[in-house]
Picture 1 (tube, helix red, strand yellow):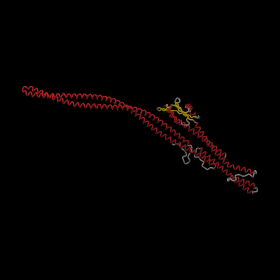
Picture 2 (cartoon, helix red, strand yellow; picture 1 turned 180 degrees about the vertical axis):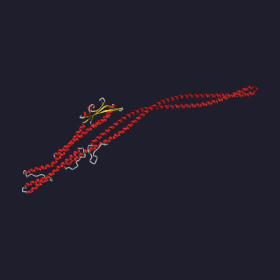
Picture 3 (cartoon, one colour; picture 1 turned 90 degrees about the horizontal axis):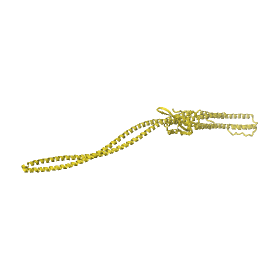
Picture 4 (cartoon, helix red, strand yellow; picture 1 turned 120 degrees about the vertical axis):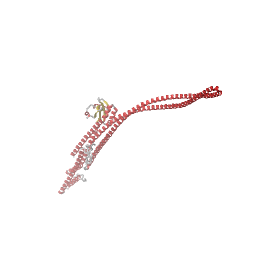
Length: 568
């Protein structure tokens, strides 16, 4: 029993030590990878914040890292080693500032892990170092987790050892206890104490048989006169029972050895990383619970690692989708930036055109004002012309009246000349000279009447033409007044257009400024999208490393895929 128990103790100790060491190394490596990944993701934003002297951007850069339970401090130093931005615990910030000038290996054994990264900026194709970033993470939590894992493994190993020891002890007690009692009875019988009662005679196993044999031996001692043959037969029967007892004991020991061998084999398979290990063969009843507990523990560990593999695959798929979508977003952002740049150029041209239109509108407004002034002057001239025409018309009417008087005078003169001719004819020869004069006067009166009629006709024509001219001048004056009003309205419209054009020019200038700002933001977003794409690629790489670590364990049973490989 002792060698088997020692072998089990050694096997459990080796498995526990290896598992604890492997767990500690895995957790330490994961911690270092987390520190390096955080440094890689924050260095780009820190470099941008350092270059732009934007402490708010630096603060936003370290916000995701600050949510980590192990994060303690972060420092951004300029190229002169002076702190530009600090966050976290003050004492650790000071230590982080000093860590920028130390060898990274100097902090390997310290409680705080410092990760230093140079901050670089590319200007016109030339890369330059503009500062240094130092982030600090506390190792206490990872050390506590490692110690907790070791304690848990030690507790499991101790529990398994106690179960095996208890099972072996119970097994040996079921065998050695009754035999010890029977040995004491036989010693008493051999010393002559024949009144001793033989126990366990009612048992149906070998112990009961041995007890009954001792009882028979006791009865044989009482019957000393029994035949030697009966004694020989009793002796042979006792030897047969002893043989059967020894065979039964050997069978029990073989069963116990088989159980411990199966358990050791399963533990060895588990130590080799094969999580499909299980004890399939049926063990004796007292070991069946131990076998079931071992199989359940291995199954739980296998399911846990399977979920780790599935989670790693999901992380990998998610990061690849993020990387793909980020690349698409970067391409669309670049296209948007180009479109915004073209829009800004077009807005500049529109602004220039509107400024030119504003100048032309101002010139048109001045021309309209001059035209309105000219129309007002033309209206005044037309009013004067209408007044002059009215005076001409009045004068023509007066001349017509005078012509009428002249016509009356000519008519009266003609009558007088006619009367004079009649009187001269009556006078005979003496009146011939007077008749000639009367004839001349008559002709003169007729010519005067004809001239007066012609003048009257001309004056009437002039009067009609003057009336027509007055009407035309009045119409022209009205039209000029209307034109002046329309020119005033046009002037008002042009003034409104000029005001609206100035407002449009101001609005377009603001829009142009906003579009230029949007262009800058879009280009900045494009840079951030590229950084996010790089971070997604790094996270996908870390997921591949996690799958590589888990692939060292055999999780699936034969007939299925035996290892979870990293995605191509």
